[in-house]
Image (cartoon, rainbow, N blue to C red; front, side, top):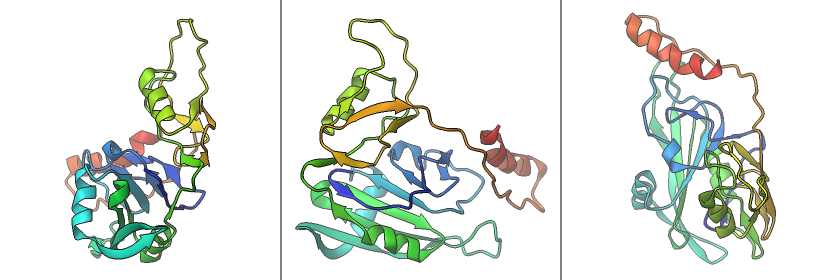
Length: 230
C-alpha cells in the first residue's frame, strides 16, 4: 500500500472477515471491512490491516508509535507488539497481541493482531519499499467489473485492466470477487489485471463455548459462525 510492502504467509486469505471480525488468518485490505459491526464471537486468528492515516484506527496507532529508524530512507515508527485484549480463562477467547508500523511520509499504517507475538514481529520486520518500476495490485473486490471507478483505481496504480466487455458494447457486469494477479501482489508497472472467480472452499470453524449463556445470546453467537458457511 502506498509504495510500502510487507510479507504475509502464502496461505493467508484476503478480507476473510464476518461483521468486522477475521475468521481465518487474513490480510484486511479495505478499511471499511474492519470494525464496522461487532460480532459476538471473539477473534482467534491472525490478521494484517493496512490503511491510510485518515482511517481512525490508523491515526490512533500513529499517535502511539515511536521512531524506529527508516526503510530505504523513508522514516518509520513502531507500536511494539503488546497484549491488546483477551487473556481470560476461556479458551475461545485467547490473548490477542497487536503491533503496528507507521510510515508517515507514505500515509500508510500496517498493524497486525495475533494470538502470537512472533507473527506480528515477523510481518512488520519484513517491511520494505516497493522497488522503482513495480507497484501493488489494488483491491477492487466488490466493484462492478469494467466500471469507471474500478478502471480508475487500477490505472492509478500504474496497471491496466483487462476488459471483459468490448468497447462500444452494452454488457451487464457482476461485482468482482477476486483478481489475477491478486490484490496486494507486487508486480511490474503496466501489468494487466483481470477478474477471476474466487474459489469456494469448505471451511472448518471452532464453535464458541456458550455454556451458561441465555438462549437468545447463544443462538446469535452460533449464527455468527455457521451462517456464512451455508
